[in-house]
Image 1 (tube, rainbow, N blue to C red):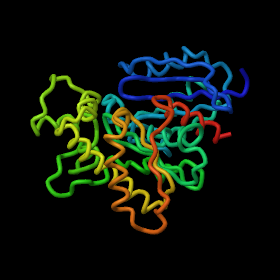
Image 2 (image 1 turned 90 degrees about the vertical axis):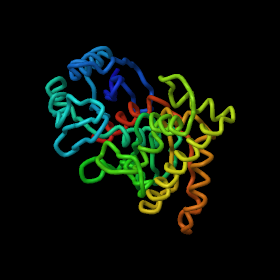
Image 3 (image 1 turned 135 degrees about the horizontal axis):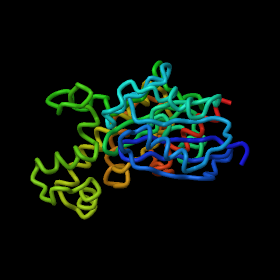
Image 4 (image 1 turned 45 degrees about the horizontal axis):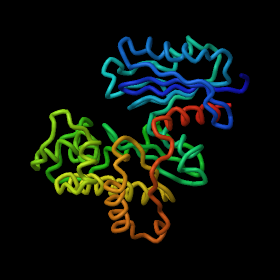
Length: 298
Protein backbone atom coordinates (compact mmCIF):
# COMPACT_ATOMS: atom_id res chain seq x y z
CA UNK A 1 0.00 0.00 0.00
CA UNK A 2 3.01 2.34 -0.26
CA UNK A 3 3.25 5.01 -2.94
CA UNK A 4 -0.44 6.00 -2.88
CA UNK A 5 -2.14 9.38 -2.89
CA UNK A 6 -5.55 10.23 -1.49
CA UNK A 7 -7.93 11.86 -3.99
CA UNK A 8 -11.15 13.59 -2.91
CA UNK A 9 -13.82 14.93 -5.27
CA UNK A 10 -16.42 17.20 -3.66
CA UNK A 11 -19.62 17.94 -5.56
CA UNK A 12 -23.07 19.25 -4.80
CA UNK A 13 -24.68 15.82 -4.50
CA UNK A 14 -21.87 13.44 -3.59
CA UNK A 15 -18.35 13.26 -2.22
CA UNK A 16 -15.94 10.63 -3.55
CA UNK A 17 -12.63 9.56 -2.03
CA UNK A 18 -10.09 7.11 -3.35
CA UNK A 19 -6.56 5.82 -3.03
CA UNK A 20 -4.69 5.95 -6.34
CA UNK A 21 -1.25 4.64 -7.33
CA UNK A 22 1.19 6.12 -9.85
CA UNK A 23 -0.23 4.04 -12.71
CA UNK A 24 -3.73 5.43 -12.14
CA UNK A 25 -5.05 2.30 -10.48
CA UNK A 26 -7.91 3.06 -8.07
CA UNK A 27 -7.02 0.87 -5.08
CA UNK A 28 -9.94 1.83 -2.84
CA UNK A 29 -13.00 3.97 -3.45
CA UNK A 30 -15.93 5.27 -1.42
CA UNK A 31 -18.71 7.82 -1.85
CA UNK A 32 -20.94 9.67 0.59
CA UNK A 33 -23.86 12.01 -0.05
CA UNK A 34 -23.13 15.72 0.29
CA UNK A 35 -25.08 16.39 3.45
CA UNK A 36 -24.68 18.98 6.20
CA UNK A 37 -22.35 19.42 7.93
CA UNK A 38 -20.48 18.94 4.68
CA UNK A 39 -16.99 18.58 6.11
CA UNK A 40 -18.22 15.70 8.25
CA UNK A 41 -19.34 13.99 5.03
CA UNK A 42 -15.88 14.64 3.52
CA UNK A 43 -14.26 13.15 6.61
CA UNK A 44 -16.56 10.10 6.44
CA UNK A 45 -15.66 9.43 2.79
CA UNK A 46 -11.96 9.66 3.63
CA UNK A 47 -12.32 7.37 6.64
CA UNK A 48 -14.09 4.81 4.45
CA UNK A 49 -11.00 4.30 2.28
CA UNK A 50 -8.70 3.99 5.33
CA UNK A 51 -5.98 6.25 3.93
CA UNK A 52 -3.25 5.35 6.40
CA UNK A 53 0.08 6.73 5.17
CA UNK A 54 -0.29 8.56 1.85
CA UNK A 55 2.26 10.58 -0.12
CA UNK A 56 -0.06 13.53 -0.81
CA UNK A 57 -3.68 14.58 -1.09
CA UNK A 58 -5.50 15.96 -4.11
CA UNK A 59 -8.74 17.88 -3.54
CA UNK A 60 -11.23 18.57 -6.31
CA UNK A 61 -14.06 20.92 -5.36
CA UNK A 62 -16.92 22.60 -7.09
CA UNK A 63 -16.06 26.26 -7.39
CA UNK A 64 -15.23 29.03 -7.26
CA UNK A 65 -12.00 28.15 -5.46
CA UNK A 66 -9.24 30.35 -4.12
CA UNK A 67 -6.13 28.27 -4.65
CA UNK A 68 -3.62 30.54 -2.87
CA UNK A 69 -5.87 30.88 0.18
CA UNK A 70 -6.95 27.24 0.16
CA UNK A 71 -10.63 28.16 0.38
CA UNK A 72 -13.72 27.17 -1.61
CA UNK A 73 -17.12 28.78 -2.17
CA UNK A 74 -19.10 26.24 -4.23
CA UNK A 75 -22.27 27.67 -5.74
CA UNK A 76 -24.03 24.34 -5.11
CA UNK A 77 -22.91 24.11 -1.45
CA UNK A 78 -24.34 27.34 0.02
CA UNK A 79 -23.08 26.63 3.55
CA UNK A 80 -19.48 26.88 2.29
CA UNK A 81 -18.42 30.45 1.58
CA UNK A 82 -14.70 31.01 1.88
CA UNK A 83 -14.52 27.63 3.58
CA UNK A 84 -10.89 26.82 4.58
CA UNK A 85 -10.90 23.36 3.02
CA UNK A 86 -7.14 22.92 2.72
CA UNK A 87 -6.40 23.87 6.34
CA UNK A 88 -9.28 21.79 7.68
CA UNK A 89 -8.00 18.73 5.84
CA UNK A 90 -4.48 19.44 7.05
CA UNK A 91 -5.82 18.98 10.58
CA UNK A 92 -7.04 15.50 9.61
CA UNK A 93 -3.81 14.52 7.76
CA UNK A 94 -1.04 16.65 9.26
CA UNK A 95 2.24 16.99 7.44
CA UNK A 96 0.93 15.67 4.10
CA UNK A 97 1.16 17.91 0.97
CA UNK A 98 -2.30 18.98 -0.22
CA UNK A 99 -3.19 20.16 -3.73
CA UNK A 100 -6.54 21.97 -4.11
CA UNK A 101 -8.17 22.71 -7.47
CA UNK A 102 -11.56 23.32 -8.99
CA UNK A 103 -13.51 20.39 -10.38
CA UNK A 104 -13.15 21.62 -13.97
CA UNK A 105 -9.36 21.67 -13.75
CA UNK A 106 -9.38 18.23 -12.11
CA UNK A 107 -11.59 16.83 -14.87
CA UNK A 108 -9.12 18.16 -17.45
CA UNK A 109 -6.12 16.80 -15.52
CA UNK A 110 -7.76 13.38 -15.18
CA UNK A 111 -8.64 13.11 -18.86
CA UNK A 112 -5.14 14.28 -19.80
CA UNK A 113 -3.52 11.65 -17.57
CA UNK A 114 -5.72 8.62 -18.23
CA UNK A 115 -8.52 9.49 -20.62
CA UNK A 116 -9.30 11.13 -23.95
CA UNK A 117 -6.63 13.80 -23.49
CA UNK A 118 -3.62 11.50 -23.39
CA UNK A 119 -0.87 12.81 -25.64
CA UNK A 120 -2.35 16.29 -26.00
CA UNK A 121 -0.02 19.22 -25.39
CA UNK A 122 -2.68 21.88 -24.88
CA UNK A 123 -6.30 20.97 -24.18
CA UNK A 124 -9.54 22.15 -22.64
CA UNK A 125 -11.58 19.76 -20.54
CA UNK A 126 -15.22 20.85 -20.49
CA UNK A 127 -18.04 19.58 -18.29
CA UNK A 128 -21.60 20.10 -19.56
CA UNK A 129 -24.01 18.96 -16.90
CA UNK A 130 -26.22 20.74 -14.33
CA UNK A 131 -23.77 23.57 -14.87
CA UNK A 132 -20.99 24.16 -17.40
CA UNK A 133 -17.33 24.31 -16.34
CA UNK A 134 -13.88 23.58 -17.60
CA UNK A 135 -10.17 23.35 -17.03
CA UNK A 136 -6.99 23.81 -19.05
CA UNK A 137 -3.84 21.80 -19.64
CA UNK A 138 -1.20 23.99 -21.29
CA UNK A 139 2.24 22.79 -22.35
CA UNK A 140 1.36 19.45 -20.78
CA UNK A 141 0.63 20.89 -17.33
CA UNK A 142 -2.68 21.71 -15.58
CA UNK A 143 -3.18 25.47 -15.58
CA UNK A 144 -5.37 27.07 -12.95
CA UNK A 145 -4.44 30.69 -13.45
CA UNK A 146 -4.02 33.34 -10.76
CA UNK A 147 -6.71 32.03 -8.38
CA UNK A 148 -7.33 28.55 -9.76
CA UNK A 149 -10.44 29.48 -11.75
CA UNK A 150 -9.02 29.67 -15.29
CA UNK A 151 -11.24 28.20 -18.04
CA UNK A 152 -14.53 28.77 -16.26
CA UNK A 153 -16.00 28.50 -19.75
CA UNK A 154 -19.61 28.21 -18.63
CA UNK A 155 -19.53 31.97 -18.23
CA UNK A 156 -18.34 32.85 -21.69
CA UNK A 157 -21.18 34.90 -23.15
CA UNK A 158 -23.02 33.04 -25.92
CA UNK A 159 -26.12 35.23 -26.26
CA UNK A 160 -25.12 38.86 -25.65
CA UNK A 161 -28.48 40.23 -26.83
CA UNK A 162 -31.48 39.17 -24.80
CA UNK A 163 -29.80 36.27 -23.02
CA UNK A 164 -31.20 34.82 -19.83
CA UNK A 165 -29.83 35.96 -16.44
CA UNK A 166 -27.05 33.76 -15.06
CA UNK A 167 -26.15 32.85 -11.49
CA UNK A 168 -22.81 34.64 -12.01
CA UNK A 169 -24.63 37.97 -12.38
CA UNK A 170 -24.23 38.18 -16.13
CA UNK A 171 -26.58 37.38 -19.00
CA UNK A 172 -26.51 34.95 -21.87
CA UNK A 173 -23.67 32.78 -20.54
CA UNK A 174 -23.09 29.36 -22.09
CA UNK A 175 -24.41 27.82 -18.88
CA UNK A 176 -27.79 29.56 -19.33
CA UNK A 177 -28.11 27.92 -22.76
CA UNK A 178 -26.40 24.52 -22.62
CA UNK A 179 -26.70 23.19 -19.07
CA UNK A 180 -29.13 20.32 -18.59
CA UNK A 181 -31.83 22.22 -16.68
CA UNK A 182 -31.68 25.14 -19.09
CA UNK A 183 -31.95 22.90 -22.15
CA UNK A 184 -35.14 21.44 -20.68
CA UNK A 185 -36.44 24.88 -19.62
CA UNK A 186 -35.97 26.31 -23.11
CA UNK A 187 -37.60 23.28 -24.75
CA UNK A 188 -40.65 23.65 -22.54
CA UNK A 189 -40.92 27.31 -23.46
CA UNK A 190 -41.04 26.20 -27.10
CA UNK A 191 -43.89 23.78 -26.38
CA UNK A 192 -42.12 20.52 -25.57
CA UNK A 193 -44.42 18.51 -23.34
CA UNK A 194 -43.08 16.14 -20.73
CA UNK A 195 -43.34 15.13 -17.13
CA UNK A 196 -42.59 18.02 -14.75
CA UNK A 197 -39.46 16.23 -13.54
CA UNK A 198 -38.14 15.52 -17.03
CA UNK A 199 -34.34 15.55 -17.27
CA UNK A 200 -31.83 16.43 -19.95
CA UNK A 201 -31.45 12.68 -20.55
CA UNK A 202 -35.14 12.45 -21.48
CA UNK A 203 -34.79 15.49 -23.72
CA UNK A 204 -31.80 13.82 -25.38
CA UNK A 205 -33.82 10.65 -25.93
CA UNK A 206 -36.55 12.72 -27.55
CA UNK A 207 -33.98 14.44 -29.76
CA UNK A 208 -32.48 11.11 -30.79
CA UNK A 209 -36.02 10.00 -31.69
CA UNK A 210 -36.45 12.98 -34.00
CA UNK A 211 -38.51 15.34 -31.81
CA UNK A 212 -38.16 18.73 -33.52
CA UNK A 213 -38.18 20.87 -30.37
CA UNK A 214 -35.71 18.62 -28.54
CA UNK A 215 -33.40 18.70 -31.55
CA UNK A 216 -33.65 22.49 -31.67
CA UNK A 217 -32.75 22.68 -27.96
CA UNK A 218 -29.61 20.63 -28.50
CA UNK A 219 -28.67 22.55 -31.64
CA UNK A 220 -28.92 25.77 -29.64
CA UNK A 221 -27.00 24.32 -26.70
CA UNK A 222 -24.38 22.74 -28.95
CA UNK A 223 -23.83 26.01 -30.76
CA UNK A 224 -23.25 27.79 -27.43
CA UNK A 225 -20.75 25.13 -26.37
CA UNK A 226 -19.06 25.37 -29.76
CA UNK A 227 -18.68 29.13 -29.44
CA UNK A 228 -17.01 28.68 -26.04
CA UNK A 229 -14.72 26.04 -27.54
CA UNK A 230 -13.66 28.35 -30.38
CA UNK A 231 -13.11 31.32 -28.07
CA UNK A 232 -10.96 29.32 -25.65
CA UNK A 233 -9.03 27.52 -28.39
CA UNK A 234 -8.31 30.81 -30.15
CA UNK A 235 -6.96 32.46 -27.01
CA UNK A 236 -5.01 29.44 -25.72
CA UNK A 237 -3.88 27.81 -29.00
CA UNK A 238 -5.38 24.41 -28.16
CA UNK A 239 -5.13 21.14 -30.06
CA UNK A 240 -7.94 19.29 -28.28
CA UNK A 241 -11.20 19.84 -26.42
CA UNK A 242 -12.60 16.97 -24.36
CA UNK A 243 -16.25 17.28 -23.34
CA UNK A 244 -17.83 15.25 -20.55
CA UNK A 245 -20.68 15.54 -18.07
CA UNK A 246 -24.26 14.32 -18.08
CA UNK A 247 -25.41 16.39 -21.06
CA UNK A 248 -22.48 15.09 -23.14
CA UNK A 249 -23.98 11.61 -22.78
CA UNK A 250 -26.51 12.75 -25.39
CA UNK A 251 -23.84 11.95 -27.98
CA UNK A 252 -24.21 13.15 -31.54
CA UNK A 253 -27.25 15.37 -30.88
CA UNK A 254 -24.86 17.56 -28.87
CA UNK A 255 -21.50 16.85 -30.52
CA UNK A 256 -22.84 17.34 -34.04
CA UNK A 257 -23.81 21.02 -33.48
CA UNK A 258 -20.64 21.60 -31.44
CA UNK A 259 -18.39 20.37 -34.24
CA UNK A 260 -20.39 22.23 -36.90
CA UNK A 261 -19.98 25.46 -34.95
CA UNK A 262 -16.26 24.86 -34.49
CA UNK A 263 -15.84 24.15 -38.21
CA UNK A 264 -17.73 27.34 -39.05
CA UNK A 265 -15.90 29.70 -36.67
CA UNK A 266 -12.41 28.28 -36.08
CA UNK A 267 -11.00 29.85 -39.22
CA UNK A 268 -7.49 30.74 -38.11
CA UNK A 269 -4.79 28.51 -39.56
CA UNK A 270 -3.42 27.39 -36.19
CA UNK A 271 -6.84 25.96 -35.29
CA UNK A 272 -7.01 23.73 -38.38
CA UNK A 273 -6.20 20.59 -36.38
CA UNK A 274 -8.42 21.36 -33.36
CA UNK A 275 -10.31 18.22 -32.30
CA UNK A 276 -13.43 17.86 -30.16
CA UNK A 277 -13.79 14.48 -28.45
CA UNK A 278 -16.04 12.93 -25.79
CA UNK A 279 -14.51 12.31 -22.38
CA UNK A 280 -13.65 8.74 -21.40
CA UNK A 281 -13.44 8.67 -17.60
CA UNK A 282 -17.05 9.51 -16.74
CA UNK A 283 -17.78 10.55 -13.17
CA UNK A 284 -14.30 9.54 -11.97
CA UNK A 285 -12.42 12.09 -14.07
CA UNK A 286 -12.30 14.58 -11.19
CA UNK A 287 -11.05 11.95 -8.77
CA UNK A 288 -8.24 10.89 -11.10
CA UNK A 289 -7.42 14.53 -11.81
CA UNK A 290 -7.14 15.25 -8.09
CA UNK A 291 -4.76 12.29 -7.84
CA UNK A 292 -2.70 13.61 -10.75
CA UNK A 293 -2.37 16.99 -9.03
CA UNK A 294 -1.39 15.26 -5.80
CA UNK A 295 1.44 13.42 -7.53
CA UNK A 296 2.60 16.73 -9.01
CA UNK A 297 3.20 18.09 -5.49
CA UNK A 298 5.89 15.47 -4.87
